[in-house]
Length: 258
Ligand SMILES: NC(=O)c1ccc[n+]([C@@H]2O[C@H](COP(=O)([O-])OP(=O)(O)OC[C@H]3O[C@@H](n4cnc5c(N)ncnc54)[C@H](O)[C@@H]3O)[C@@H](O)[C@H]2O)c1
Image 1 (cartoon, rainbow, N blue to C red):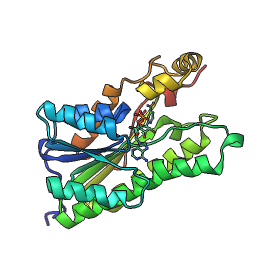
Image 2: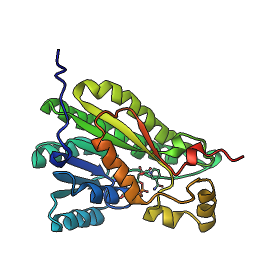
Image 3: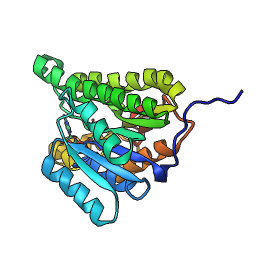
Image 4: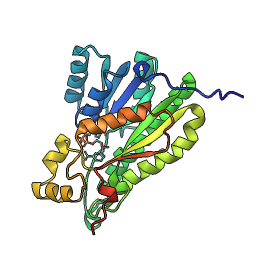
């Protein structure tokens, strides 16, 4: 008997939600996907930059809308998906990119930092995915989710335990939801990134630390944001991939120094 589960539309017909689209990886992902998809909904708490990003894409002839919100606000998930439903007839793709990266040794990790990381990097991803999946279920349409993960969740990097805990939860969430949502025709994958040279990374990593990091990467460089964005595009097209981790880290996690 034929399997009647919902199917995904071709990429050029899909409506894509990118969170954290104002800058860094989210900006690169939006630029990469804009010419390939039907419309983009760009969400961020940085109003000025996310609106400028949507304006720029529209000036290039793309369909793009900015939506300003703090995704840790409990009402924001439903509101964002409602905008996608009302403006574009519903979202087909969710790229959970918005996140914060804050490192501290165990002894210096406060409850406040731990909770902030869990709120932004885990809870908001979880509940936005819930609202997105619910909209797809109601529309009987297939779709896919890409979660931004990290090589830090696959190996042990000292001084990053709270961030690694949060992202590790995202990796586990991906696997469980891939199984749970497969009957709805929804794929869920993680892009596990190593050091990616966004504006934030270039400004936050001290030159000596950056040089040290490069010595731990067999390819001896960080990823370009465009390379990470191309990997997101690959996961959108990879119709048989679900529950997987695509590791893009220049060999960092497989490096064993002799
Ligand atoms: N750059 C790297 O080396 C790297 C490596 C591994 C994983 N990642 C992951 O990739 C993602 C993007 O990283 P980046 O380097 O581009 O960071 P970034 O700080 O440059 O960009 C993050 C964006 O998310 C937005 N954002 C943060 N909190 C938000 C909230 N509560 N509501 C709405 N928007 C919010 C910010 O305003 C910003 O525009 C993060 O999830 C990060 O953990 C990055």
